[in-house]
Length: 117
Length: 114
Image (cartoon, rainbow over all chains, first blue to last red; front, side):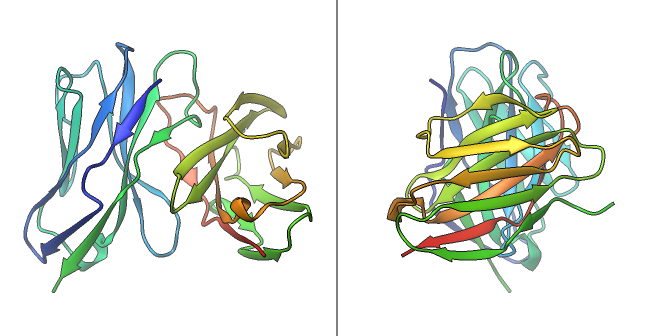
């Protein structure tokens, strides 16, 4: 069975600095999708960034980028120029490309990110 | 477009009761999935519906059930509530529920079982 591990329960960053959140996963599938979701106090999960396993290039979305290491099964999220609004729970998630649907995500336990002014 | 709407936002029930939660997806979205979020277990997939058919189901007891209507709105029902059912229940929608689609989440229903 696939698993997703986030080893940092909490992280803190100074405003305008850069922070990296870690995620590792385990799977025997060759093709899959990885995601980072943000959950602010409003509780609504918001997709931050998505990576397709067959794409070697790391995904980027404005201040958010990932370091995807397929062989190491590692998928870290880098937030540059951190802003107060980035404070939230961040969840790493996995979905196999075959036999499943987008709804059947496997989530890590999350990392709570605090941003200090 | 309106986002995913979940009602009610908060709910308090006692053990043994049953509860029904509602989710209205974004207009045009045909796939609705449900997740349970607890501090201990994190986010766990409950089930997914597409065009009124359950397409996928997580590892939950039969007390947890759901359905989807022809307008894509979905309900989930939990019968014979237990204390451990206290959780945030999140609903998410997408057009076809394919793995390469973006999922849109609602703000959840916080269920407390006393």
